Amino acid sequence: MNKYPDVFTEYTPPNFNTNKTIYNKSLYRSFHTPIKNNNQRHILKEIYKSFLRGKEHELYIKYQQNHANNYTLSSNIIIPYYDQYNDTIRDMILLCDPLDCERIAKTHLKKSTHLKSIMSDSIISTDCNKHWQKQRKQFTMTFNPIVSLNKIVPISQNRARNCAKLLYELHKKNINININDFFLNETQAQLQLALFGTNDKFQEQTNKKIRDAFNTDAEPGYIRDTVFKFIDNINDNKFNGPLSKLLKNYEKTTDTELYGNIIVMLFAGHDTTGHTLTWLIFELCKNMKYQKILQKEVNDFWKKNGEKEINIHDFSKLKFMNLCISEILRLYPAVANGTYRQFEFDDYIHGKKNKKILVPKGTYVQIPNIFRHRNPKLWKNPLKFNPFREFTSNEIWTGNKFNGNNPESFRYSPFMYNSRSCIGKHFAQIEMRLMLLYLLREYTFILLPKQKTENIEFNRGTMGPKNGLFINIIHNKCKL
Picture (spheres, one colour):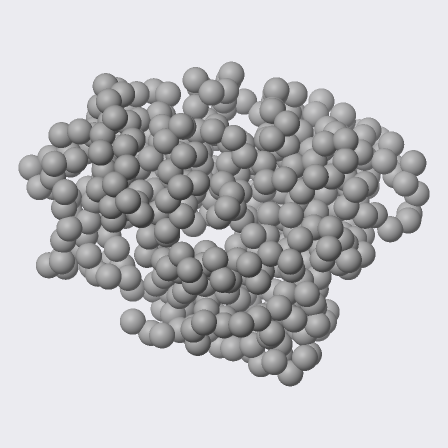
C-alpha cells in the first residue's frame, strides 16, 4: 500500500479472496443477519455491487426487513466487512438501534480502519485515540465559529455574492443547469478561498480538476500530486487562510497526517455541503410554498440588513431557513453511512428480541445516520420534507442567538456526535446560509420537466443525486 494513497484515481477493488478472516460466529445467534452457511463472501459481493451502484443504504434496508422483519429500521444487524487496510474479512455490526447509536458513538471513540486506506492517519481516519485527540485539540481553534470563522465570513460573503452572478451566466448559456455541479463548484471555491486562502487563479485552475478526480475521472495520482502542490504553497506562505496557517504550524506526530488532512478538507470540505444545498433546492422546487416562504424571509432579511457585511450572529434571524436546512440534513444526510468505530471495551447492545448482548472489545461497528433520520418511530412521515417539523432545541444549529452547538440527539446526528463531530460543521453552516441569501433573493428555482424525482439518491461516500440535478431559474424581477 502506498504511503500516500490516492484511491480516487488509483483504485484497487477489494480482495474478497483473502485468506485472512476474523469471524465471531457466536454473535450470529444473537443478532439478525444475512449470513448463513458461511456465505460471508457472497454477502460481501452483494454489498459491494450495491456500493458501486450508490445503493448500499437500500440494501441495508432490505436486510432490516427480510432478516429482522423490522420496518422501523431500528435493528442492529451483523454483516461481513472487508477491511482493506488490513486485507481481512471480518464481522461488523450495523448499529441502528437509536439509543445504542448515540451511546456507542460517544463512549467508543476509536475509529475502525475504514478510512485509513483513503486518508492515511488524518484527523477523521486515525485509529489511535491519542493521535486523534492531539490533532483535534489543534484544529479546534481554527474551526471555532466566533474566534476564527467569523473573521472569514466577508470572504465567503463575497464569493456568495458572486455566485448569484455566476448562476445567471450559466443560465444565459444553457437553461438546463446542473445545480449539483454548480454547488459543488461553489463549495470547493469557498473552501479554497476562505479556509485555505488560495487566490482566484489557483482556485479556478484546480476546482473542476479536483472534483473530477474525486469522481475517479483523472490521471492516476492526480489527487496525490495536487495535495503536494497544496503543501508546497502552504509551506511557502502563498496560501494564507486560517486552515493553511494551521496546517503549516501545528505539531505533527507522523509524516503522513498532513497529507491525509488535506485530502479530508478538499473532499469532505466541499462535497457534503454541495450535496446538502442541492437536496434543499430539489425539495424547494417540489414544494413551491416553502420556497416562497423562504424567499420572503430572505427579502425581509435584506431589507433590514441592507448591503452591510454579515456576521455569524445575523444567521439567528433566519428562523425558517434554519428549519429548512435542519430538515434537509435529516432527510438527506450527506454522510448517510455515518461513522465507523471499534469497541474499546466489552459492552452491551440490543440484539434479537431486544435482549442486551455482550459484544467483545475490538468488534467493528458502523453507525449510519440515515436509518435514524428516516425512522417512522422517531419521525412522523419521515420521507416527507417538512421544515415545520418539531425539532428539539439541541437539534437546531442556532436559536435566538448563535450558540455554536453541534445539532444532535438520539434520533438526529447530521454531523455525528460530540466529541467526534465533524470539525468543519460550522463553516458548512455559514457558507450554506450565505449562498442561499443571495440566490433566493435573485431567483426562483424550478425543476426541468426531464428531471427525475424518484430513486435518484446516489450514496457512495457521500449522498448526492445520481447524474446531477437539472433546474431552471426565473429572475424574481420577472413574472411567471
